[in-house]
Length: 338
Ligand code: ADP
Ligand code: MG
Image 1 (spheres, rainbow, N blue to C red):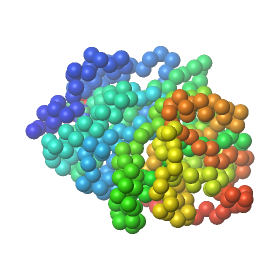
Image 2: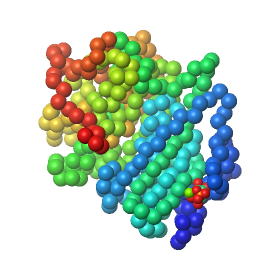
Image 3: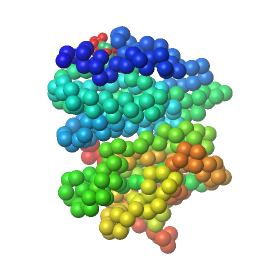
Image 4: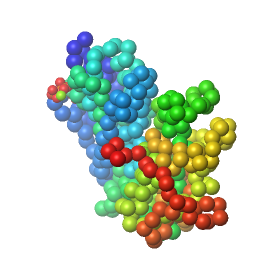
């Protein structure tokens, strides 16, 4: 199978071209794709790369990998409150393995279709397995102002929220590496969170005009929240007694607490929640006067949200125990070059 046969077989879907509500004027097949932004909108653009051995194990199920490669990109759009439109795929493959390609494209395109996000081009080359996706999304431009959610909008007094659950992906990673012993049921449950994360696109859209700042949690809550604080030039405090519950929240409003939290020490749970990584939840801020609107946005998007702290006028991120006393921050977020 040659390069062009591969693209045609696994990534080109002419039958869908007639179905799209097309902002994609020209898709796969020419030197450039053409994307036609609607009047009164801005394009939101983000790029994420997945490298074998760094971001995933070499034996990971290809269908899950296809899902995750797009999910991590859609998560960035969600954090900006952008509606997914289209994406490109740059793929380096050691060989053209039909079974692998079929699984990968199935997982990738199923998530793409779920979000109406069209594959409009890419590049394919032989080499060590590497997947690079660029997504394009849309945000309204109203009265000379962008409706995008940015990291820089948090204000003293704002509440801090996190969607879904945190720490389960990292728990699965530790389980797979053998550094922690998990029951088969817990491993199966948390592994889904690691390998098939749910980008919070609907929540991001519902939070437009309500949240003051947002970020997606990919490297660990404390590190990612610090980016919001730096960009917004504010401080914050987080109540650990509340944050720790994020370890066992189910991903949706059906939330009850999972049994596995009883298998872990409190210290371990906190580490997973505060610095786990690979969660792809949204951390966001909103004025306290908008609590009702945040609740409505969560309900509308069928995503549970938990209020874990507050923005202040300081410069630090403080962690508080149940008595409101400061606890030293000893947790480090993931950094590729640290
Ligand atoms: P060029 O050499 O002009 O860059 P290519 O031969 O690399 O074009 O690609 C041919 C067409 O196939 C282009 O439209 C490109 O966007 C598309 N394409 C290449 N690889 C992929 C891929 N993995 N997924 C989707 N489209 C792809
Ligand atoms: Mg090319």
